[in-house]
Length: 76
Image (cartoon, rainbow, N blue to C red; front, side):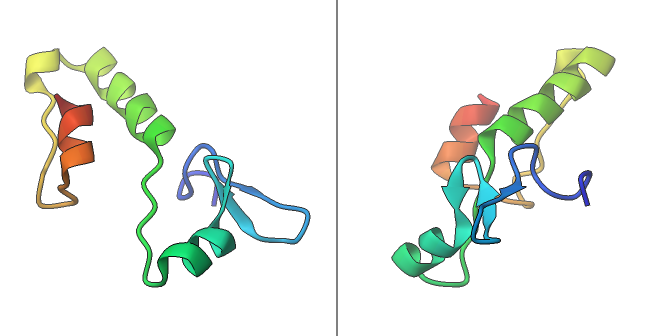
């Protein structure tokens, strides 16, 4: 599962999934479900891997996968 979950994923003392230091159960209670949680640390780490292996001009983000203002700002 370590290659599937975000880099910041862990388990709290209560057994809840933690993402980026945030309790997923608390997030679901606050914002409702279904809930999409995007881990910036994982996104940036994977982008560094791609741009390290390829020329930056050859690395593109497929907006159809998940597109919102915050993601567009990260990609920029």
